[in-house]
Each structure stands twice: as C-alpha cells, then as structure tokens.
Image (cartoon, rainbow, N blue to C red; front, side, top):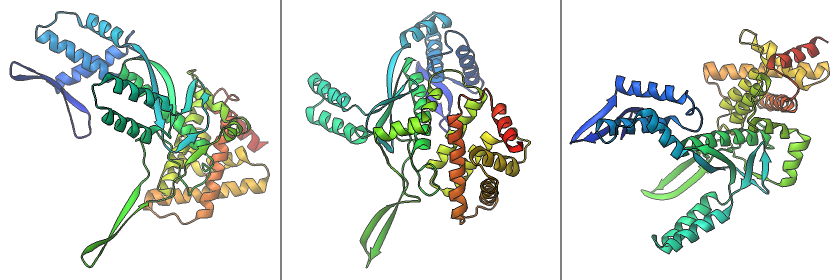
Length: 392
C-alpha cells in the first residue's frame, strides 16, 4: 500500500506483517526514491519502465526479502520482472473537439476516427464469455459508444510496461493536440477558443442559474461560461490543403523520433504555448500565452529588451513595406501594454482591435517558422537572418 499527501504525491509505502505495519517513510522512503532514480538511469532500465513501476517492484522485493519469502538478489528480481513486463502495447488516446473524415499519418503517428468495431468486438466477446449479463454488457458498450464513438484518436504502438506506455501515449497525444489547435481555422482569433485535448484534460466550462419564484423552483438554466468553444469537423480536402499549401506537413518532424535542433525545438515549444492560448477561456490568459510564444521565438536571450526586439523581428518576419512593418511594431507595443496591465493590475481587456491584429501577427509568424523548419540549423541562425533583413 502507499500513502500520499494532499497533493497526491506518494510519501510512504507500507505492508502488514504479523498484525503490524512495516513502512518506508521519511529518510527510508527518500532512500527508495534515490535507488529508483539510479536504477532508471542504468541500462537496461533506461527505456520502457516508469518510475511508479520500478518503485513498486523494488518495494515488493524488499517486502518479500524482509518477510523471508525470497532470498533473490534485487538485480536478478528486477531483470526478471522487467523482462516479463516489457511487451508491445497498442495505445489509443481519444481527443475532444475535433472529428476527422479520414485517417492520416503525421510522422509515424496515426490520427484516425475512433474504430467502432473495437467496441462491437468487446461487446460480443463479453456476452459470449457469459460472466456478465447481456443487458449489463450492452449498457456498458453503449456508454463506450456515446463517450468515444465520435472522437478522433491518436494511435501508436509502444514497447514497455503498461504505465510507461500510457505516459508516453498521453505525452504524444498532448503534442498532437497542440498541432491540431494551431492548425484549426480559428487559431488566429482572440475571441473563440478550441478545446482539443485528450479526453478529460479540459472541459467546456458551464454555469447554472436557479430561479425561485413564490418560494418554488421556477426555472433552471445551464449555459456556457466565457467564449464560445469551436468544434472542428475536419474534411479530408481541408486537411490536404492545410498540410500542403500551408506547409503543416512539416510538423511531422516533431513525431519522427529524430533529435530536433534548437530552432525546431523553439518552434515546437512556441506552437504549444500559442495552442494553450487557442484553448484558454480567459482572454487575458490567451494574451499571456501568445506573447510568451512570440518572445520564445524572437528573443535572442533574456537580456534583450522585449518591446523593441520582439516587435521589430515580428514585423520583419511577416511583412514587407515600411508602413505595414511600423503598424506591426506599434500593435505589438499596445498588446504588450495590455499584457502588462493584466499581470500587474488584473485589468480587463477592452482594446479588441489591438488584440485582433496581435493574434493574427503572432500566428502568421509561427506559421512562417513551420514553413522554415528545415531551413535553420539552430535558433541563433534564425535570429541572425531576421536581423540581416532588418538592416539590409
């Protein structure tokens, strides 16, 4: 058994022996965690095994050794258990907010409509097994269809123990959701959000009002709170256009397993930050995320002045002509002031025209970087190219 604190962090592991509790806590548990860290940094345990798995198995070995059940060495025990648990797992992570017409592959990751045949097969096998009543099985299968039948899934095969594979699959699904939020038609807008996430990660906030009249319930209303969420029905023709004409096919690079250079890493992180803005309910939080994405890509280092450096590079990255570029620089300064008011004074956003232009500008800049993913070996080369354009 394990004991967790209020944050959900495990602080103690224990078992019962002869009517008494034997536990590892305090320094004992910290020693266990240190051992887990050392094991996971050692071959062959570096890949395929989660911290939870290694910790639980070491504790089981300790329990059996202490109880006299086994005299096996820890290394022998772990090698055996890891060999037994290292198997292939086909993982499907359903996403909310998007439905696709046909399957497609992005860098070795399959993105597909949920396969309803899987639920049909589950229902038939459970009924044939006879351990659960047919009505109960059908109700469960119908519940699966209602929850997942309309969803898009991220599918990939992993090798390892099940907890490790689940963690990797969820990380991958988060990355795919980032790309889909950035690809969607409303991504350049500040006033609509798109909550494409692994199911359960985010939900559409609602509010309820109960009206009482003459001491009796008169009316109950449920409504969406905040901006209206967008739901994307992605047709295959639209997907092809986005991938080819807008160069989003380059994002496959993030899912091919190769080491990314510093420019590619920055673009991936900027997409993730901007995508958080696309999903955020509070427009002030959306400004924060979008501004952070711009700073992450357009600042050389932390010592540079933000307003002038980011604003000017943003202008030269997406625009031609001095008048247009000056408008972009001025818009960035106004947006930065809005961001500062929010951070320091929790001000409400009122200048909608500034936000409209700011979000479009940042989106176009990041999309341009997606097109250039294979053009720069590192981030400093990208910054140097923008500065070269500026001074030419």
